[in-house]
Length: 157
Image (cartoon, rainbow, N blue to C red; front, side, top):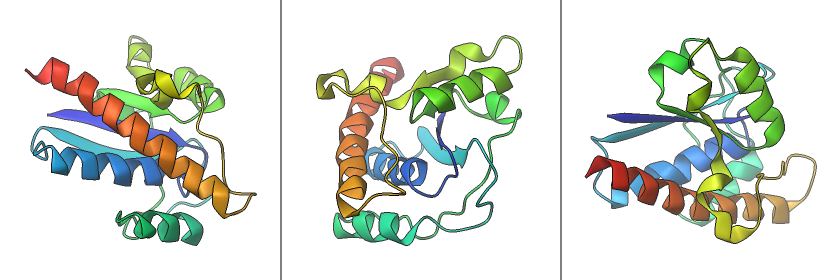
């Protein structure tokens, strides 16, 4: 089983969206029993809360159900539980590297490294913007999820 953790700031916009999209991509590929996903935030601002209603609505409009997720904060134990911890932006990546136990920094990366064709290295935070920002997060999530799955499938063979 390969375990992936997606990480943003509060775990209510970007990372739960990416988790939901990635889970769907994994299910469609028939790899539910081989790849697992979760999400968390670098800060505990929203622990126990569902994703932002705008994220839930945008995801639902594309057929993704993220409403049942609940925000949580990254812990040091996550570096033992997950094979990859993928940050939504460089700030999250820095925070993960700071938190990582010795010998576990190699598990940290940027999510959009799996979609280099997009020309983006970071998933922008839609929280303070309008609907378009949530749609952009979904576009990036879909491309990154396909790229990540392709990379993982190469290692699963």
